[in-house]
Image (cartoon, rainbow, N blue to C red; front, top):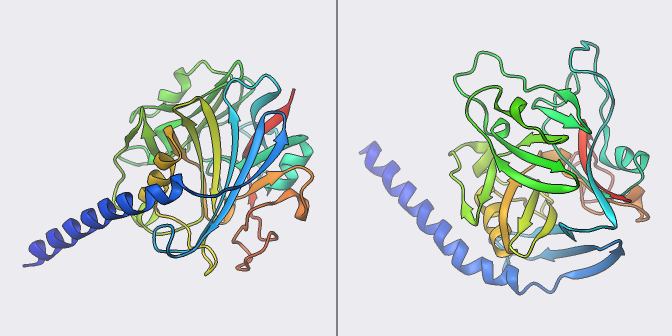
Amino acid sequence: MYNKIIGLLLISQFCFAQQTKTKDEPNITATPWQIQDLGHGIVWKKYHFNQKDLFEGNQMINILETPLKNKKIKFGLVAADEKQPDNTAKRLLLPTSKIASGSQAIAAVNAGFFDTRNGGAVDFLRINGKMMDSTRVVNVPRLPTHAISGVTIHKNKVKIIKGGQQSGWEKQLKEENVLLTGPLLLLNGEAQPLEKTPFNDNRHPRTCACVTNDKKLLLITVDGRSSESYGMTLPELTSLAKALNCKDAINFDGGGSTTMYIAGQPDNGVVNYPSDNKIFDHAGERSVSNIFVLLKK
C-alpha cells in the first residue's frame, strides 16, 4: 500500500508539473517586462508576478540580457580574494555588490557555491588562467550535482558545459575561466534530469545563467523566502528558462546568496531583494566567494 501511495503521489506531481508548464510558460512569454537599457549592449528586465501569473505564487524576477558577441563588454569571474587553494587560512567573503564595485563591473550576479565557514569556492574555480579553488570532495561515492557541470569563458566566449561524474574531469579544461556549478537545467534545449531532493524541489531564491537560441546571455535572479516573492523549485526555474528561449541553462548558488548588482543604481547597486535579513528590501546581501561580471572593455 505504501508503494502504491508513493506511486500515485509521483504521478500527481508529474501531472502538476505538466500542467504548470502548459499554464505558465505562455504567461512568461507574454510578460510586459519593465526594460531599461544600461548601455554597452546590456538590457535590464524586471517584473513582479502575482499569484495568478506564475507558478501560483508571487515572484520577483530580474534579468540581465546581452548578446554573446558583445564587443563592448568583457565577460568575467571575480573572486573575493586572490589567495591560493593551498592556503589554509580563512578566505575572504564579501557581498556581491562590494566585489562588483571593486572590479568596476557594469553589472554582476553571485556565482559559485562556497564554504560559508572558511571561505573559498567548494568547486573548481579558475580565473584568468589562475586556479583559485579545487573541488572539495571528501569520502563521497559520486560528485555532487554542482561539481559536474559549469560555465567557461574563453576569449570572451561564454559556454555552459556538461562535465563528468569522475573527480578531476574539470582539470582537463583548457579555458582560462572555469566555474563549476549546477545543477545543469537545460542542454541543447532539453531539460536535464533533476534528483528528488529538498534543494531541488523546495522553493528558494535562485540565480542562474542561460544561453538563448538567438545567441544571448541571460543572468537571472528570482527572489524568495518572502510573501512578496516565493522563490522557485529547480523544475520551475527550468520552465522559466525554457520560456525565455534558453537553449542551455545552469543553476548558480542561490538562497541568501542570490544578488544582482547594477552600477549606478540606488542601494549600493543591489536591484533585487536578497533574503538574508528576512525583509523584502535591498539590504539583505550575503557575503560570497565569487561573482559573474559584465565589464566595460
